[in-house]
Image 1: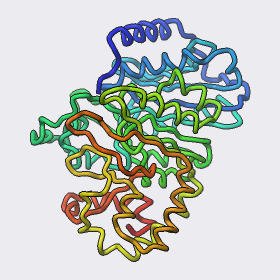
Image 2: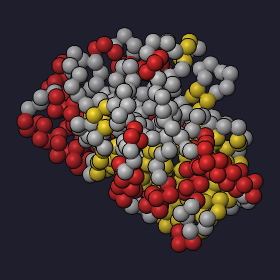
Image 3: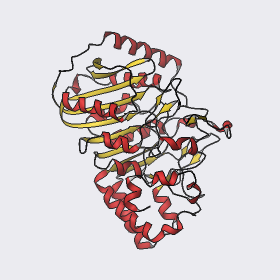
Image 4: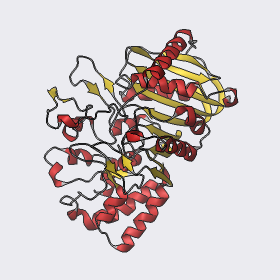
Length: 410
């Protein structure tokens, strides 16, 4: 996708350069006074989103005034050719709290180290987490090459170059956002990602009020279920997010004070007001304590219809991705197209509404583009369909390692 205009990028880059040169470096034994809420923004941008990270941080800083003294906004950021740092944004300034040697920020141990540091040094009544980087929902890294050889982030697998078939379909607007991605110069494979279970294991149970993904394809039931004990709410999108990301000059105050619905509204309204291919926004908020009930309802459906799923015709099921082999389908539309019994469908729909109290979408993904996708169904959660044709690739076997699949026998 198109990133920033050259003027906006140049201004943002100069600003960040000046800030990082002048920022104060606070000793590691610093402990801040208790605040109402601390939000950690984890920016893994050692990739083709590096310049956009600068602009997003600048936007966050532009709206943190003296009136936000009861909140901590911390940004851990790793960009291309810049050592990772933990920043404290407050009172229209950015302080460098800690500097780190070069490290792989898609490594779950690094992720957990940053969380533990914030937990220890920034005592708060509550905490929030914003996850900002490249990635692909529940998909394990080893399957990217098979699932999406047509996309730029699937360049290689096991040292083998991606096939050139469908090369003309490579997204002309790259990059987009998902979670998480680290470029590895001169190495094979040329990138590393944080797999779902690694991510879940790195996040302490019950610590965060919310997890917000400024990232593509993270709004799937498999991710939500894996993180159900990690936060009260999860905000995410079932499909791609424009590379500019959330409009932080508008939404930063919202997520700091816990106004998640307003944050979602602001995100949707911002992109819905755009023109052309940028007029695309899918967003939802999941209430995690309803996910176990949703899983139990879904398991009843699987018990009755499991034999029909592997050879199901999915051509008319709402799909959200542009991959060669589709993996992200709308959960509600999938259950509807299974044509389950009325009482079972009704029970499931009630629980789905309880689980997803907020959802909004624009009518199209990439409107006007040759790969435009009409959005006729948006439940706020996507789901994988383990079709028989994916058995040989091992994709179905990998899927059955997810907690959602294990519990629902799906």
